Amino acid sequence: MGQRTRHPVFARFYANLAGPALERAGVTEHRRRLLSGLSGEVIEVGAGNGLNFPHYPPDVARVTAVEPEPRLRALAEHQARAAPVPVRTYDARAEHLPFPDASFDAAVLCLTLCSVAAPRAALAELHRVLRPGGQLRFFEHVQADSPAMRRVQRVLDATLWPRLMGGCHTGRDTQQALTASGFTLTSVDRFPFPATRVPSPAATHILGTALRPDLEGPR
Image (cartoon, rainbow, N blue to C red; front, side, top):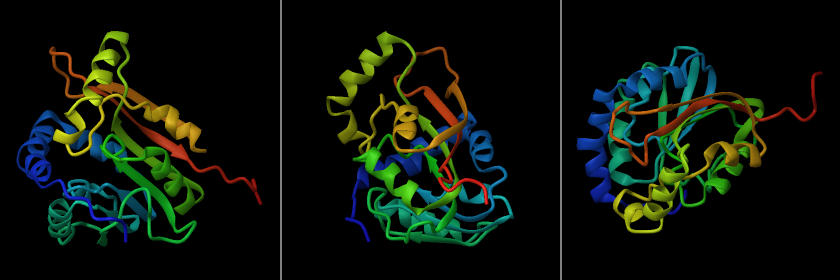
């Protein structure tokens, strides 16, 4: 198991305020898009308090849910009891997944890579545990489109923002990190969320699919 990660204040904030606010803003639609069509053995890294669990389709054989924050993981375990597919939670970190190579048909990242200490290491681990040809589904807030907002993101990420927000970084270039980690992007939808008139450093999101290439090619 990975090193225990504790963010008790942020965990309470996310579970009691931020999470419900996202639901009211319409994040459920994006959760459904993210998970639609999945099947087989799936790993979700950074499962939080388990709000994706109700939306897994019935063709999923099992969800292996990784969450290092104790309070959020306890909430995820509660959510798992009512999930439409089998879910087992694990105390582990994205950078050190305690699973054999090529264990999973698909992987899910949902609002996770912003707060991972070493996102490239996490993506390397996901590449390792996915079977060749396996899918990585992602929904993340990322680096902004405008130079002015990117400057705001750099300032925030260099100050106390990550400490206050459970390690969250507002300006990561996740799309580039995915390709640099050996994944092939097959679809990317880029959009603001929530849709408001007030600019936000965490508004730019991407939702899409990447593949771990089958280097051996067709058989």
